[in-house]
Length: 224
Length: 155
Image 1 (cartoon, each protein chain N blue to C red):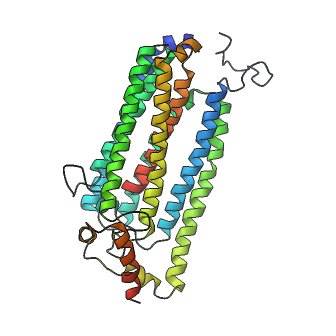
Image 2 (cartoon, rainbow over the protein chains, first blue to last red):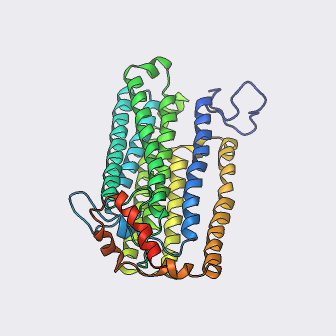
Image 3 (cartoon, each protein chain N blue to C red):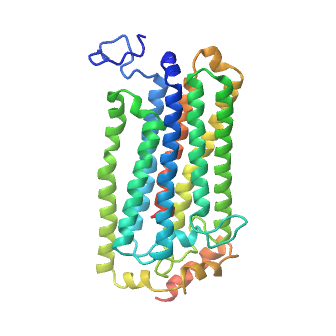
């Protein structure tokens, strides 16, 4: 009982207990994510600043309008799929954390596998999209897409797109690698011997953050 | 912590599904607005900006649900929440200052840089879709080497 009392009047700072009632590693994960939020924020604000300083900008619906196997003229469809893949993998991650609370090793393994599958599916979608755009002539330093008003496309459109989705994709990739490591540790019974599955929570925080960033990237690049 | 988890196993699961549905519905509304703008609202104007504003509000709502429920920040101690949320308040200044600066730079260039506005708004493509298909099989390297030429050609 003593570790979970959160009644008012508890003297958190008088010593002998954790003032935030949270494990050190988890707290540090939160502060890391906060700093990472500033990194992504800086990228997105740079993008916004350049976009606000430009007279024209390409229309995302004209640029991102292809779906593998279905051809062109389908704006938002592929990115919707990517968004739902990440939301679903976030949900399976919550379920893994939930199973960890109950000490349900089989449940943690099952949901971690689904989360990893979701992450790999998202990365595959991104790989396809990048390849497709590359074959249309888009890359760092090369923007074949005209602006909304038909004028020559702003050069920074592709620079920002590839840098920011690339940085996010790199986070997804590291997330998948970390998830695989934690899955192997779960299978080997490391957390069972440790007596708790707090590691799943910490990894889960990182994974949700990746989903959170995608919410912003998706809105800023594909919708507005 | 372990003993409390057992009691709220069911309510916890319910909350997960509730938040999942909220996130999905918000995403679908965003996509519907985005698709509606693509179909019926091609021209920039007040309504388009207004709808984009709604999309950004929905985005912030989604961010709140992910952080508060999926990341469980809402369940932590208030002091801890504040050490994370208060520094993020810098973003309010960060966003306003930089977007204002970007906009101001545009106005200054349009006003004082001779020919800048004409240069950046003259139509060089029939329509953005066709312009895109012209370069379908052009490799990026070739494309980038032809760009400065076409750009400087007019001036």
